[in-house]
Image (cartoon, rainbow, N blue to C red; front, side, top):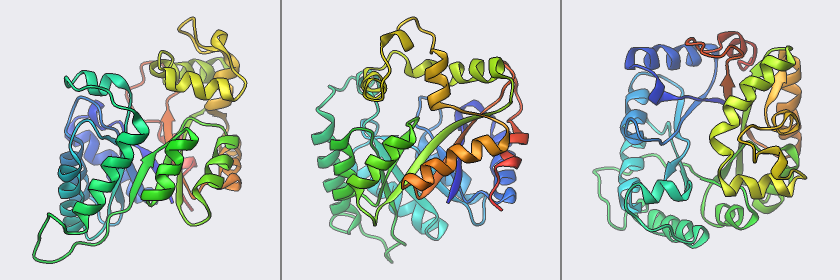
Length: 291
């Protein structure tokens, strides 16, 4: 499965409608929408499902501080029923600000996610929720980077999402998940052979993550140190490791490294090489389209 991360909150509804329909026409089989502080993520997923025919729509990710497990189970069952089984539920703990901005206390993430998924599975199995007919099953993915969260995904989910990780991380994730779970890898990418333009675009993509300790721990595990992020500017080597850039063949080679390491799905996070560009990078999306 090849999908695209869609920054839905940055688009007007007509722009979002046109963008997703064009992706579907190009052969992409899924779109993944993030959970920010704009449109409500489940409502937006419903809108996109109602305006597509075959494409899966996934929350990538809905964070667990935004809704309790029963609310997510209700949304998943409803969206699956309305779409004929095209909804995918991606969940994650996000980062402490996601809880704090709602006036909630940040909880130990492993225990939080394990409890949430247990309650979600109980509710989705019909323990509390009732509809005239059971909807198609909803695949559940967990955003996981560390081995303990990956084990939670292996135990209680249908798959895992990883974001901005090297192929070595994909290989260790597959080893933890086992052979039968889905592993969806998000690949930030920029279509340009101009190294300066590519790295500038990569820095814009990385900027929001530079202050987050969870990413510092991951980057440190793969040989990076504070000098690669502490100035508020990602180093060249950090950008080159985590953002695929070059011509289409170079980006495909990076995707193939993840697939060879155990990924079952690639989700493209596409970036425009020109700062301030308002149009999606269609040249990249067309070059990477399935088939």
